[in-house]
Length: 182
Image 1 (cartoon, rainbow, N blue to C red):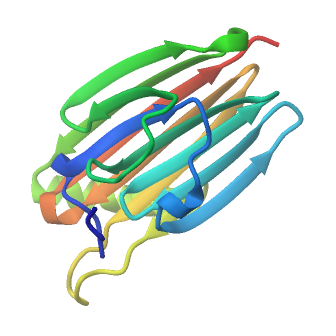
Image 2: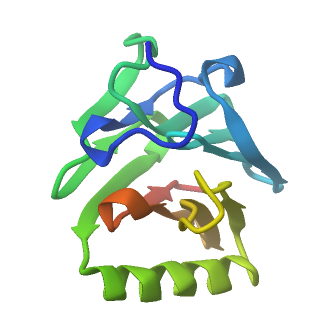
């Protein structure tokens, strides 16, 4: 298992969903927020390798994690596992009328476009959601960002994340939808 001082390369990431909680000790948590509502609890963590989001409702648990491929997460109760490359979408029906859908997209951008998108994410993160601005390798370099937003609707939750990789001029965007019956 590698120890990442900044972020791993995008090609070394995986997107996973588990039907159980994952211990926070598995991750280097950089920013944290817990949201408690009448019918669910949501924990959002930005990590060095991406994010870990845990949704719990009436004994049901879903944990979404963007991590390094060599990170030793348990395979027990793993519902989805995808290398973070290109674009991908998937879904999982769960017990109790819960349905989980996800998509992610890896965008390699021209440097000028990347800088513009990076600045937009930074500005948006100052207004809403959970934002973590990494420390740069040196004072003249651009620091990576991790940004997660949560939007709640009637019987659904929309999770959106943006992770920037300045050394690669790359943005990894994911969007997830958790729908549940009453």
